[in-house]
Length: 216
Image (cartoon, rainbow, N blue to C red; front, side, top):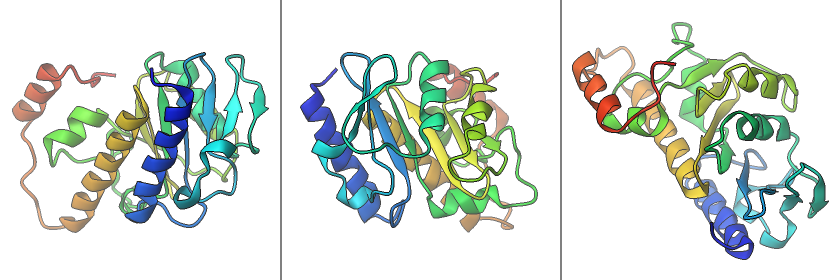
């Protein structure tokens, strides 16, 4: 793992990049990553991804105690649910990205596998994306819904709210959630056009070759 100082800088750099490209606006979204000692660095509540301060990130120790930095995001139950149920989780990102939210609003959405098989990378980087119900922002029930998946999904979309993705590290988590938004954008752009999707055989080949978590 990288040093804590470098991790702090990386969190803020990646968050600013997503903010600058319109993937989450205002003071929306939150991000966290594991530290070398098993603790967490978390974006503070009410902060903008475009203006995170490395020195003010919320710091938790390995037992979950807030030991330094500003007050953490109110969505901490989402983050801890992924860390507690997925041993491979080294970072978690939650955005309010437009097309992912739009896809969650569609009446014919497949709750068990929300993203249509339009590109290889949506499958490779995300596996099946679970659509979770609507919860009030900050409701601990969001975390319980993630725990109910028993660590079997790395990515979910909260209905009418936005995506949450866990990755092995902060870069992987950010890359995956950007792939989710890109695929959701393609889905909305081609909606009603009968697009040519990947066949079942093509999907299975991807799942096998890249060892994708799928039959869960």
